[in-house]
Amino acid sequence: MVAPAHRPPALRGRVFRGTTAVRAGLVTRRQLDSSPWHRLFRDVYACADLAVTHELRAVAAASVLLPGAVVTGASAAVLWRLDAAGPDDDVELTVPPGTPARAVSGLRVRRARIRPEDLTRRRGVPVTTPERTAVSLGAERPLDEAVVLIDQFAAAGLVDLGDVRAMAAATTGRGCRRARDAAALADGLAGSPQETRLRLLVHRSGLPLPVAQHPVHDGRVFVARVDFAWPAQRLALEYDGLWHAEPGQFAADRRRLNRLLAAGWRVLFVTAADLHRPDRLIARIAAELAR
Image (cartoon, rainbow, N blue to C red):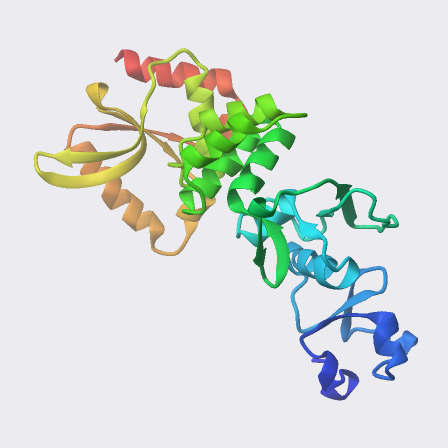
């Protein structure tokens, strides 16, 4: 633990400009290069008590580095609690056309006008609304990744898919068609990004479309909710993610599987490795449906 004396109270837990802190006599230039501080951008530092996340860097960029800039794109999605960018990824900001801004490492600055109705504030900085963020990412990202993010927005209760589709339909310019396609493909039911990817794969395969998040009952007794189901065939398709390795989860999963089997259902599990071999996976599903 760094000695508190090396961190002036005025800077503890704070993000600040190095030149301002030096001018105020709070630290020296040499001290800024020491362990009590994280360097986020050129001349922008954070107290080492703060974890360096993409969210922290985005807030620092919009509040200290370019005050008044709007957090947009993947960085806006992170402020809305989506896992859309990592700690070291460039922070995305948008400023009005004609705004002078020098290139800064770790920062991606766009110049565009954003309608007032597409703006709000989060963590004390301007950010695009969830709907505008979802549509913008729909226009920028590859189609499947755009669907993943829109699904996450909807599953988190941040957007209504009808509103996103209406906004995408009214959007013009680069990527507008992809945004409309992504909004149309999203269903907001996936419990994880991999479930969305699995759904898209199955939908494009030519197989009968499954029912997402299907509740299975044995008579009037609820058995389980499965990721995807073909009820007529009593076949469930489940994505098996890393979270199943959590303490106690294995036993709970076994009990759930036993209940499904006792109710006369078959369960086909899919892993991340299976998604890298889509032809084999689709063949497995087709064989199970044909039984």
